[in-house]
Structure formats: structure tokens, C-alpha cells
Length: 117
Image (cartoon, rainbow, N blue to C red; front, side, top):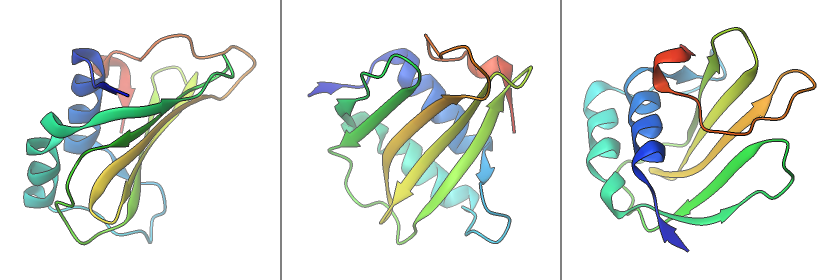
């Protein structure tokens, strides 16, 4: 287990500010709920990470329940090379998935500047 690094935190903040629910019918977060999750990122630890060498998938622990909501926020990388899913479960950030949409693996976290929301 380790604390999230600055690149992970920057990506998570960007997703929490702008990403929309994966399901059009899924619960969305209010500005206040998004702020509460961002403010609690300091306590987030990476518990596990995928070792498939195709995606980047991080599971988190340590964040206290900030809200009473479960949803999946989504974004994609400019050019369509990857889909990003941020799972918020029982009011806490629990998993970040960055999956390729083509045949090329995802080898690094995307810069928030290249995300499409």
C-alpha cells in the first residue's frame, strides 16, 4: 500500500471536477459533493494495481465516506485511445480504470489536459 502520487491526485481531481456519470441515468454529483471528495483525497492510498500491462487499474483505500452515493464517472482520452472510469462506491473513491479502446496498451496516466468529458 502507498499514498497516491501527485500525478494520480491531479488526474483524480480533474475527473472529480468534470467527469459525468457513465450511465446517463446514473446519479450525478453536485458541486458540493465533488468538492467533498476532492478535499478528502489527501487520505487516499493505493491498495492494489493491475499487473496485466494492458490497462492501468488502481484500487484505493483510506478515504472516509464523504457522501451517500455510488456512481461511475467517465471520460476518454483525446483521440479515443482510452476510456477512463472512476468508481465512487458508498461515498468514497474506490477504483480508477484506464482501459485502451484499441490494440495499444495504456502505459502511463493521461495528462488531464487531454481528457474529453
